Length: 567
Image (cartoon, rainbow, N blue to C red; front, side, top):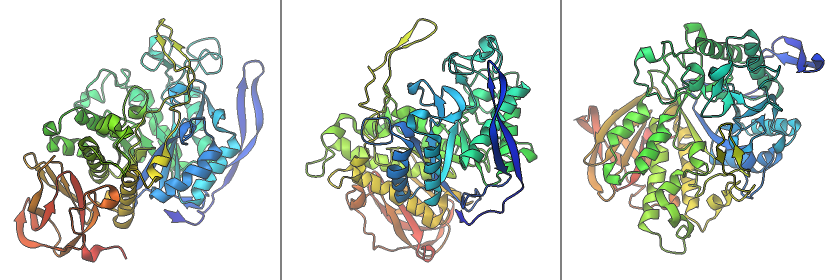
């Protein structure tokens, strides 16, 4: 983070235009646009700075079952994000959308903030408050598709299906029931480019997470396709060249006007050059969202512990292109929706309703769930990328799903998606659970806070040094170095190891700086935090030195050189 105003550039006065079906273009007014960002809090993405952010849907970020507001979020949630140690917040469902259960992805007005959450000035107040707290504010922007609505959306705006979109089947996304832009049209590019600039200049967002980039880049939209890494998959006839060019243009615009702005792309295909600057021939994103990680955890949680493969875990976490910065996350918003389960619910299921109070005995299912939940989050943050994303509620293991008040939805093919009779029961996040000192959720939240403060103290996520020294399928052990820290994970369900040898690079005395088994985090206190661990010379696991530790089952422990302790 950097404090202090940046030098302001030349100011241009631009006409703000809208198009009326009846009277054509209307000049609503003028606004001043600076070439350089002038906020006093700017996030600089460099190799020395990490990105850890919380993913929030404004509408249901409170614990009461209700549609919440920008003001609620500003006053009640932003201080919580700051206290947890995160340095950024990614906000979903900002652009106006009429279909509530679309999670904000069926946009009907690209230049308007969602009116159900408050006024534009209240959104600006939210962003200003976040900047005062030193938080970066990222917008989940949707340029990959648009609402299929004709009365309040762009669809059939001039009476045809091709004004903004491809005509016919190419302009329709069969899975999302939405319209697909024709990025080869000059006016479509102008519309979307001006939209990105509008949110940066008018609302002072610090950057974007671009939704559905894989769908944009390929005519098959990444559906029913398995990407193997063959370059024909990326640069063949299925590639939408116009869309790729648009992504290059929008990233060039964002970074040209605001060099400190952050651009994150949601891509599951692994497109080459995705995070290479446009001037070097790349698409120009700063980060790629590492989408495979969350899917891998759900895949493993459906299996027995004995069937987990630690090598498979490491491969998924580290499967990214050389020097490509990624944002890793253990749980996505899709897994918190009705019809699916959060990670915590996969682990502990109905036991979460009866056995999370500290004044009654736990169960083996709860003990296992809490232990693995902490390990999953830490190893995702430790190995998954240069940024870490947490979906709201996962920091303390939210037990329930998210649902929207909604009616039955009738699709064009005659199918009906059942609603919930406009129920608000699951339109919430129970933040009170993580704060209650009589519940086990409190320890899970304290561990998440400790993870963020560990990164703040040691900056391991953006260190150039990363070495995985052990992936032992028999012992279920994973050990690796990230920056100047040594991470030790024991995924075995009942085997604990005394005098377990850990390879390391640097000589000296090590100490524990984070322990998932700490009673503060709901652990069993099996490690002595006053113990000192001295290195031995001699190669082990490919490292020049090693030290001996006690590795209890289902624990994650981080060691640091005593000389590297933060002052």
